[in-house]
Image 1: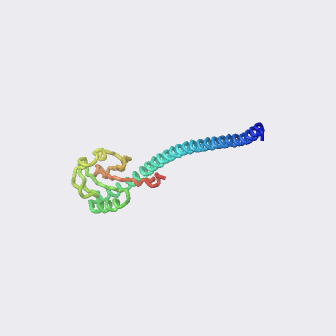
Image 2: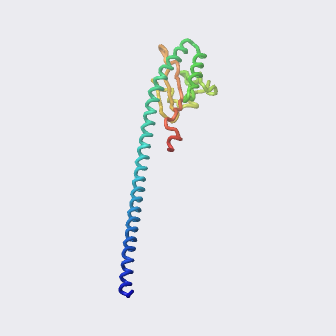
Image 3: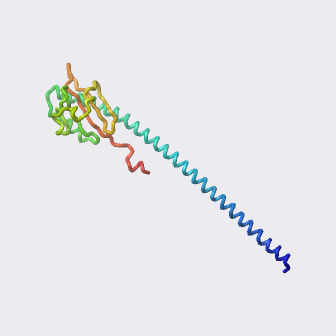
Length: 188
C-alpha cells in the first residue's frame, strides 16, 4: 500500500469511529439530561406531595377539633342535667358513680364537681377532693356562664350546675383527644 492509500484507509477508519464517539457522547448527554429532568420532577413532586399532606393534616385536625367541640359540649350539657338532678336529691354517691363510669372512657382524664365557694367536692382523682379548685386548676373555668370548651392539648370543659334559684356548682372535665393521625401514619 502506498502512503496515500494508507492515509485514506486510516481516515476512513477514523471517520466512523469519531462518528461513533460523537453519537455515544450525544446519547450520554441526552441520558444525563433525561436523568436530571427526572430528578428535578421528582423533587418538585415530593415538595408538592409534602405540602398537600400538611394541608390535609391541618384540615383533619381542624375538623377533629370542631367535631370534638360539638360532641363534648352536647355531652356536657346532658351530663350537667344528671349531676343537677343528683345534687337536688342530695345523692353525692350517685354523682361519684357517674364520674367513675365516665373516667373509664378513653380520653377522659379527670372530672370534678366544684361547689360555689370554689372547693372541689367530688373528683375522679381523690387527691383533689377538698382542695381549693384555683390552687391547682385555672380559675377561669369556674367563671363561665354556659358550657365552656377550650381546645388546648388537653381539652378543658366546664359548665355551671344551676338549681331553681342559684348556682349549685361547676362541673369541670379534662379530656385528651385521640389523635386522628397517628405517628406511624404520618411517617409514610
